[in-house]
Amino acid sequence: MAKSAYSYMATWYRRAGREVEERVMRARLIEWRKAPSIVRVERPARLDRARRLGYKAKQGVVVVRVRLRRGPFNRRRPDSGRRPKRMGVYGITAWKSWQQIAEERAARKFPNLEVLGSYWVADDGMYRYFEVIMIDPNAPTVKKDPDYAGIVGKEVPRRRVARRLRKRQKALIEKLKKELLPKLEQADEGKQ
Image (tube, rainbow, N blue to C red; front, side, top):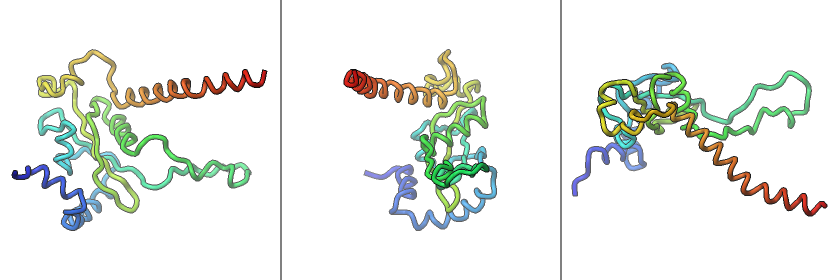
């Protein structure tokens, strides 16, 4: 059975076709470093991945490239005196994934658009790049498309990225209630 064009595109982002892609990506990354951190791009760098997430080349569908700083999440050193261990500068990890942070930044930059999905594009020594697929729910072409009906047609509060975060927080709170409350109650009974 013959492979599709998208399967050949996908091999570029696997080890098999890496040497061809590296030369092309090196030139791209030099341009991307000079560009702003959040940029609207004309077409996706990984068409196969974008199509799987719901990208279509039509009005109202937008691709945004987000650049994130790589490395640990370090805070500014405090001015007041304390021992280095207690400064709270190093070893702090972000509890969100880089991909979620990229989606949130894109949603903040373009408040009239909805996030459809995102994917990793490239890394270099300093930055990590993601492409975020966004749609305009008010565009007539998007409103007519049955594939986007789940996002556009509903009369629910928007901002899907923020809702996903709230769902995770609620799930974490419920999990902690189930696991920790019985243990705390048993510890209280043991003391009395």
